[in-house]
Length: 127
Image 1 (cartoon, rainbow, N blue to C red):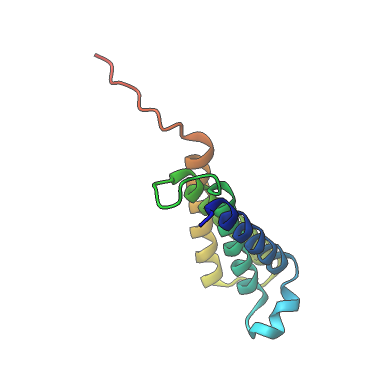
Image 2: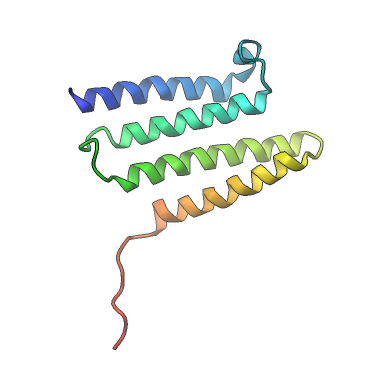
C-alpha cells in the first residue's frame, strides 16, 4: 500500500472536515443535536489529525515519529484553547468549561514548548 497517498488523502479529507466543523458549526448542529462548542472541539480534533497525517505522509508508517504526534497535539490543544477562551468571554461563566479551558491552555503551552522550543539535545554535565 502506498502510505504517502494514504496519509495525504486522509489529511486532506480530515482537514476539510475540521475546517468545516470549526468555521460552520451551525450547519452541523442540527445534524448532531449537540452544542456549538462541542462541534467546534470536534473540528479542532479532526484538524489536529489532519496535521499529524500531513506531517507524517513521508514517514515510514509504523515507526516511532514523535514530532508529527506532538505537532498534532499542539494543533488540537491550541485550537481548542482558542475556541474555549472565546466561548468564556462571550457567554456567562460556566465552571466546567472554565476547567476544560485551563487544561487546554496548559497542554497547548506544553506542546508549544515541545514542538517549537525543545531541541532534544541533552547538554553534558559540567565536570
